[in-house]
Image (cartoon, one colour):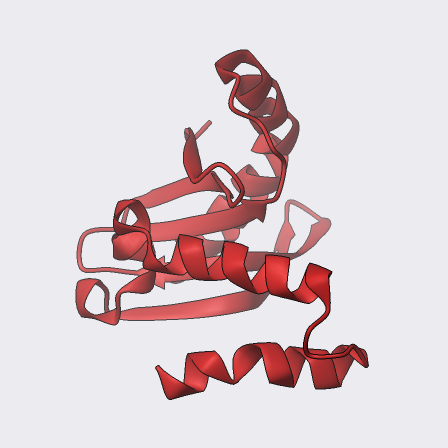
Length: 142
């Protein structure tokens, strides 16, 4: 779309980069590939969900402990809520994906608990979306 075509120019202006900056072009192409991937259409195609939000701040109290985080993408569908945490790692090895997922498990568990308070009747599907390898690593509920 026309709006998507303007993204590199807007980001370049915000970051003070030239519009032909190699890293900027790489970032945009990577994001564009994820956005248009049929594998992830349930997360990015607005006809497949009710609502979606990016960089959602989350702050709540859990048994006397303040929990604060930023959810990369939150997608609300009729059947579930998707909690997406983007990762740019270049990992294709299943064992390495599992190890990295284990590292982020507690973070996503806190996100899941906070969002479950807002939508108690919908199941939550949380996971890591690896943008470079177009892989989804689900993180099961505790």
